[in-house]
Structures are given as structure tokens and as C-alpha cells.
Length: 510
Ligand SMILES: [Cu+2]
Image (cartoon, rainbow, N blue to C red; front, side, top):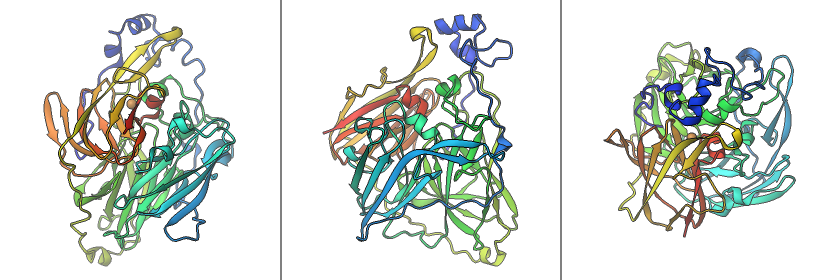
């Protein structure tokens, strides 16, 4: 979540930026570019293009479903114990009753919500009944490296393991979990594997406000109900489905609390789609980011931008006299390449305010002005630099994009950086490419210090904990962090196709 609009980059044309590359120049000359009206199809690349189900194939208008919670089987206070089983499951989601095989945790879409309190010990038995290896990565949570579902610690098909970690104090926030196996993360997520994780504070200043959970996820479905593999456009730009779902439903109806005020926890669980949320007539008050509450509420926001994998918490108050209002996401310019079809706003959800009683709206108390104490991370002991870049490749005669970190493709056997435990580090994330790339690092929350673009440095106005930071083409983002556990950590672009294609590195904390 950035408080400034990430949108205003001038749109580059694919042909202009790529025709300068030797192989693409010739590809252009041969009329091989996909989708351009004046050009033929993309050789073999689009030959197998699947026909997609129309957006209306999933029914809209059902009441918004609450997330199903993972039941704690531990009798001991302060211990959360449960089982997550990843397996194929057949679900009827299309109106014509055509069935779809998803991969899901405990047969649920999205995966169940784990709710614990800071300081708790968590023990999750993971059963992998997928046809391939998997892991569970606890996105954003400060867990030890060997419990964090690194690709090095894959659970084979048919295998199982227990993830065990104790959560520290002051980590209350809105997290999620998803697979992180080598080469299969993107596929396992787009087939349905992702679940939610809330760490509650022992003392939450917003506890009295009714809470709402909105999980946004994309789904791409073929007309026959199957989940198609990625095509070249997905591999290049990150996969976006024709369905933009909320809690796995298409455009459900949220009946707003009669008291007139709700606290929304919002997850962008998309593989690639950025969200720019608007609710006409309503104002949002930002109260939390990836790593929990911010210091003071930021009121009067009219749009909320969340990059892929990002989470926020906002307070929403009913606009006086409002009936049903659509929550829309507007297209976000993030430097997509190729012939991108024109994008339009999508109504994600209809919010029905009609039950709100005006007298209760008028009587709402003001929000607490101090939510949490966040101290700026102090003097820097070490610096790191990470550069995201892209290269065209024609290896083996196949056109593809290479997504690189510091000029290299990910290699599980290579340690890219070394950090010292408990030291404040300044990381400079530079985007030397033509697309936006959302940076993520495992096991730690960071503070964004400043952003530099075209020689202009903009200090970050919001002191907050994040595990996601967008980087725009040509931009350098400076962040501070402290690693609290030894061991190997992954850092990567969270457009999952880019991560899969190599835009990932490893830092060893010693
Ligand atoms: Cu990326």
C-alpha cells in the first residue's frame, strides 16, 4: 500500500521497447507478435490458446461468505494445533454445473483462516496429497527459516511434516500462507492453494469494531471448467484470470453492519493482479499494513492500492443515505508487455448499506488516534543492493523472458547475500526493468524509508511494517529491516510467474 498513486508511468508500447532487441526485431518483422491486429498469431505460442469461460459463467449476487476457520485441536491455552491437507478437490463453481478440479487446503477455497494470538505456539501438521512436492510458506510471519516452507525443505507427494513455531509479541497482523516449492509455486497457487492467517493482539484498540475479511483472488477457467496452464502472456505479465473473486465468490453482496462502521482486513491473494479499490461515496481510513496496525489512522482515502500479496486494514463508514454501492478495482498500469487487451474496472463486491441506521451513524465515536507504537529502525550497520531486471531469451529456439535478481536467475544452491542477525540493514531495491515488480522477503517485516525515481527522492510518509514493496520501472526503493532468526531466507518478486522464472534470491542470516 502506497499513499501515492503508483499509476502515472507513461505507457510504453511493447513494439517500441522490444523491437530494439535483436530477436524480437526479427520476430516483429516476421509478424509473430501475439494479438496485434495487424500481425499474424504468435507462431506456436498461441496455437493452443484455450477458450475461456465467459465472466457470467459464475453466478454473482450471493451473500458474502465468511471465511471458514481452521479448528484448534489443542486443549492447551497458548497452543494452536491443527492439520492442513493439500489435495485435489472437485468443485462446482460454474453455473452450468461443469465441475472444476482445484487444489485446496482442507478442501476449502480459499484455504481455512488460522486465527491465533501473539505469543502463541503454532503446530500445523501438513499432509501433502498433491501429485507433486509442496511446502507451506507463512507469508510475512516472523518464523524460523527451517519452519518457513523454503523450497529446500519440500514435502514430497504423499509426504507429511509438522511446522512448529512460537510467535513473538508485537506481531499481530494480517498474513497468509501458500505453497513455496521450487518451480511449482505459481501453479499451486493458481490451482487454489492459499489460506489466511490472522495474529490477534492481546490488546487491540479497534477490538470493538465489527470485522470483515475480504480475500481477493483471481481465477482463470477454460470453457470446459478446467484450470488451464499458463500461456505466454501469463508467463510474461503474471497470470490474471477472467474472474476476480472475493472469498472465492464472484461479486457477492456484503450486508454492511447496521452500526455503520466496519473494520476490513483485505488480502490481495492474486498471483499478479494489482488492486486499486474504490467504493464511490465512501472514505477509507487506513489503520493497518502487512505487519499489523500503523501508529495513527490515515483518514479520508478514496482509493486503496494493493500490489500482489499485500494486505491492509481499513475502517469503512457507511456514506449517509447510501443504498447498494459497488466496490470496484480499477486497472493499474504496471508495465505489462505484449498486446494487452484493454482493461476495465471490475465490480468485485456489492456493499449494501441499507440496514445502516442514520442515528447510529451520527453517534459513532471517533477512532482512537494512537493505534500502536512503531519506532523507526535506527542506525544502519550494513547495506544490501538488489536489482530486478528482465532479459529476452531465445534459448532452445523458444522465446521467453528471463526475470533476474542482480543479473542472475535463481539458483537454490547459491547464497546471494549474507546478513547478520539483529543488525539494522538498509536494502536498496532497484528496478532496472520495464515492469513493476513487487518485492517480498521472508521471515521479516521492513520499514520503507524512501523512494527514488528520475533523481527525485521521496521520503516515505507512513511509518509502517511491510513485507511487500512495489518497485516501478527505474525506481529505487530503500527499506530497513532486522533479521531476528538465523538461516536461509528467500527474497523475490511476488508476481508468482516472475518468481518461478528466476526472479528470486537467497540471503543467509548468520
Ligand atoms: Cu515481477
